[in-house]
Length: 179
Image 1 (cartoon, rainbow, N blue to C red):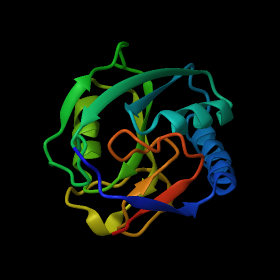
Image 2 (cartoon, rainbow, N blue to C red):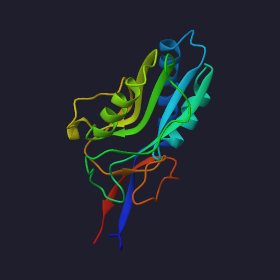
Image 3 (tube, one colour):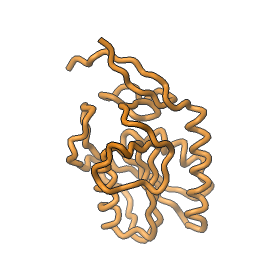
Image 4 (cartoon, rainbow, N blue to C red):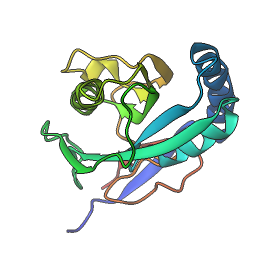
C-alpha cells in the first residue's frame, strides 16, 4: 500500500502534555485515595506512552494491564466494529480500575471497553483519555478525565500512529496531506 505524502504540524508540545499529565495524576490520586492497588488498564497500542508517563506520576500503588482493541487497522476511519485482540491477564472483580485511552473519537471503542470492564464487576472504574474529539462522537460516551479536547483533525505522535508510523514523536501533531 502506497501512502499519500504528508507532513506533521505540531498541535500539542511535549512540555504541555507533561504538565497536563501532572495535573491529571493529582486528580486521579485524589479519586482513588486509599486504594490498596489501582489497576491501570491501557488500550493498546496508542495509549502505551501516555500510560508510562501517567503511572510514573501517580502517587498510588499501581498494577498495569492491557487490552488491545481494533477498530481502525491501517485506515484513517473507524470501522465502528470493535474487536478485542488481547484481553486482560489479571482479574479485576472487586478492584479499582482506571481505563486509559489515547483518543476518544467516535466513542465506539471506549463504550465497548466500558461495557466489557463493567461486566467483570470492578469495585470502582474511571476512564481517562489523552485526547477527545467530541465533534466526531457517535456513541454516547465521555471519559471521566480528559487531557485535551481537539478539533476533528487526524493526529499522530505520543503513541498515536498512522499505519504504524509516528508513534515515537514526543508531541501530538496534525497530519496534513500534500500533493
